[in-house]
Length: 182
Image (cartoon, rainbow, N blue to C red; front, side):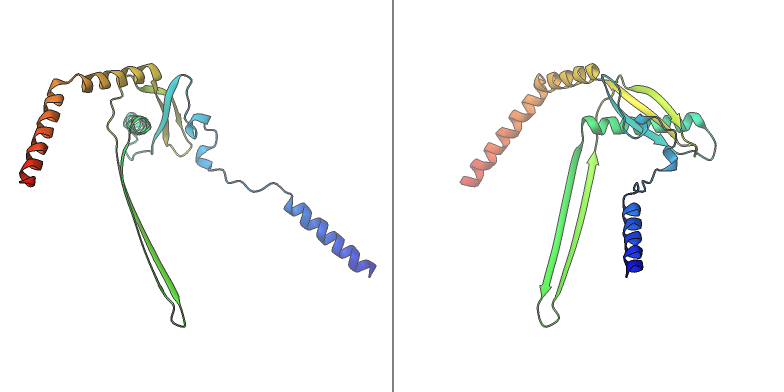
């Protein structure tokens, strides 16, 4: 009986020790030695985003860097302004005769469009991984963004042509409503 208690005690201690070990954390070897901004783009006083480009067969680093910068600018633009169209459909059915079944399907479609001027954006840092993928940190100064937003709001507000078009559309809608009521 003592031997059984001893064996059970050793088994329990072994289980506790295995359970208390550090959990296995997967670290992508691609990011070994990477600066922090590669996975979490940040820059003091600036809006930052990361872009990347895999090596090309021609070995043209300049082209690869330009592609990474373009991807970074796209990500910056998305951060500043994104129009999203989205549709989500679901269907479910249930039968309950003896061997009841339940079927469900879901479909999701989305489209994102970004249109944003990024004058003043530039590369803050660059890093190449062991696989040859180039990562760039693209930034734009917050003052540049504030100035750009101010210019856009002023041009839309003071645009006489836009106001006239809005007036024409309202007038046409009024005429249509009047015609339909007769």
